[in-house]
Image (cartoon, rainbow, N blue to C red; front, side):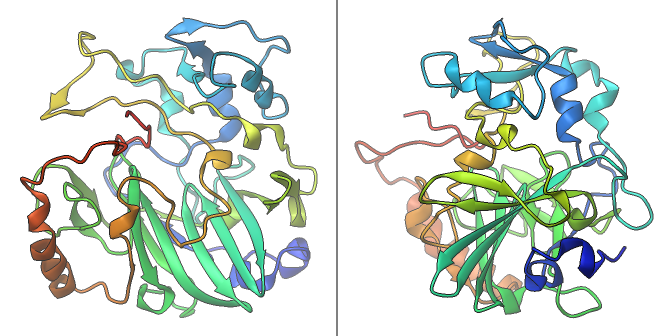
Length: 337
């Protein structure tokens, strides 16, 4: 891995760099880290699958939040839709293969967002998206985002690189869900990561290495004013794109769309994810609040035995009658009622 010069990021606390995740991509995954700018260059904003006019065309990282003035949801119903049909595998979707050092050259493919919560507690988001919670500069817990949910562990439980500091993260094939171990990860049962396939399965292995620090914009986020400020070596970084409330990707394809596939109610093509402003940057717990957060906890081990124990404890979720007024969340993170 390449080394980020300490002097270049003087305004970023050193522990943010020392304990940053290192990511291994899946060896057979054609989709590598994507440039934020390239995504905008190859998409157009749509609402209800219809193009919308943009006053400051073209859309860029410096004006993306202007889309929040469109639609019935203050931009929340805007989808950055691929100009080319994604099922034709346009080249831009393949992203940028990391170089020998784990970087993506001059293209920015990550955002590091630092949130000072007071009393010595700092949350650092490495988008998209691990979060590490620090107390007085000491890493205490780490969140791995996985589809609409994810898992939290003590920082000490995570496997580390040769320095013994940076946690190893495995990005799943195609979905890019993030896991603390390689292998099979079944996420059919909420808050349980099974090592044997059941229905909804991710695969991860130690493929090409990706070091997010080498290709990142750095920001601080002030929760009281909900504002982002560029920092470190990227003080001139664009900020408009961080405030965009819409979706990075196509809207979920309709069930009668020939491109759509359905597996027991689970769609192959779901709506694109939302951006940093929608990731509960001022969260109380290590995990974000959603339908499944009541079953979350900070796990202390990665061993298969603890997974099996959790699985048996969760078996009771089958057959339970759905409670009224419970919000359902798709694997894309969209709330659907």
